[in-house]
View 1 (cartoon, helix red, strand yellow):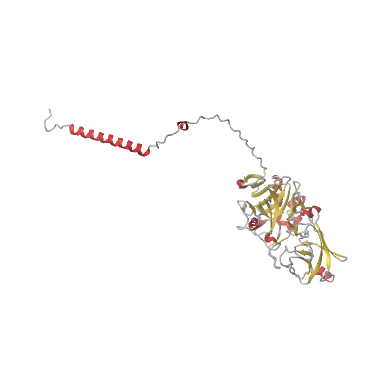
View 2 (cartoon, rainbow, N blue to C red; view 1 turned 135 degrees about the horizontal axis):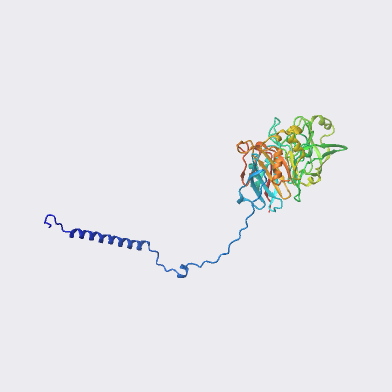
Length: 458
């Protein structure tokens, strides 16, 4: 039995609980009203037809042609394609990993591509001086010429006590103008007088590719006398005693003690098939004559020049005759020389094989070729033209190749004819706006000329 002290009335507690429940219900309703007003979608009428889900159409499976994986030769560890989105029709850019430990960059042009062509560019537009491949291509773009890829080309000297700040040793023809052609002598950088030295590449007007040992066959006829010309825009010395200097060489001949004769009133420029009358307007027995813009300078080394100095005077007239051989070179429009031939009709040059087996004893002047170095080259097949650079002198990345290794590798990737260009730290392949390889120097080295693939004029 409860007493007054232990009895408590439960009614206040029950009322408090009911009040809390009512407050909770009111809060829930308020939240629902708020969400309905704020987040309710627009009451704009919707077309019921559009709101209905569209029927699913029966889709036939799309047939996708999968290109079979290309089989690479055993000498290739890997081949990567570079900048594929920027390839025009007929152009390709690859990076090969050679199993022997070298990285090779190759720009390819289909020979039947109507929108592409081979071309050359001369550093600073003259024989003297050098320029980077990037600098040369930049100048071409300003002229409206659009190169796609370019590789350093000919050999030459980089400077000497005569003031020649670089000049090429090899043949060079641009837009039909015969700008440089050497005498074939067995000296590093020159094309030796042998089948191995058939290393000038040219393109005929009908698109035929030529790879030949080219001879000048130049002569001056003065009265009953004939003087054979050894070279054009090359060094005049005892091994090359008669040289013609054109305005493409530079401002002066930079010779010493040569007998020199300024010839004018003749047709310029010189070409592969040329004949013109001339008149002698100046005689200089000390050398280093200025080269007129409307004439050429005939330089004769001192021993031979003494005899001709008695026969040629001011106002002497004569005929200059040039006929390149082989005969097809008389119409070549673009031509460039290297120093050694690598492949002929898909076969490695026999002299190159002997050279490799004899550890360079068969051609000691070219001993560099028997060691692994960075390389540059040009090759072609019936279907394609190739511009190639091999990186080297970088352990762990690429050590380069010997000439024999290079020829063997080229043969593996489908090149049938190839020549060696200036290599070493000069090796650089510019393509699609930048240097794509890794030159041996941490900077791009100035070179003498460029062999390139470019777009064709419309």
